[in-house]
Amino acid sequence: MTIQEKEQDIIDEFSIYDDWMDKYEYIIELGKELPIIAEELKTDNRLIKGCQSRVWLHADLEDGKMVFSADSDAIITKGIIALLIRVLNNEKPEDIAKSDLKFIKEIGLQEHLSPTRSNGLVSMVKKMKMESLKKLS
Image 1: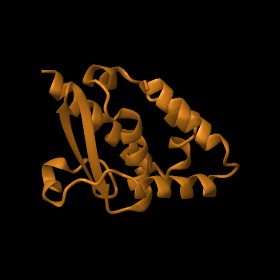
Image 2: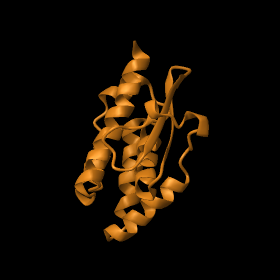
Image 3: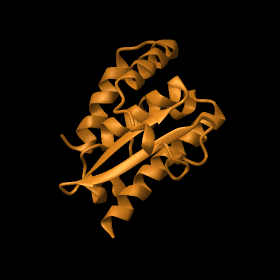
Image 4: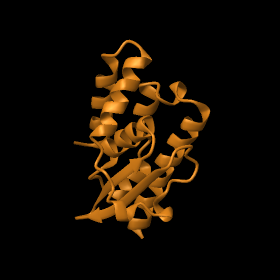
């Protein structure tokens, strides 16, 4: 599945919910399925700067594709990083670096987050793209 196909799946899933309370509940459920980062990897250098909550992200390159794991101390944030991982996991670094992640706008995620969570979302995307670019060099 391409990044765009994974994004479309998410857009389709979110379209079945009428209000944002249901969408938030779905995001929380997604967070419960997140590939959790190992405890020993919850280090300061893996904390995503710019997030209101504490979010750790680990990135690895396996067989030419990025593999992410993460955790957060906030349930909504954990769901948001789970969405991003779902789209970007097992993709080539160059594809991640050039992806526009249109699903964020399509499902209305950014506009339904508080300003600090919205900034955190931008920081998560930036960190995942930066980790991918590092693996290219």
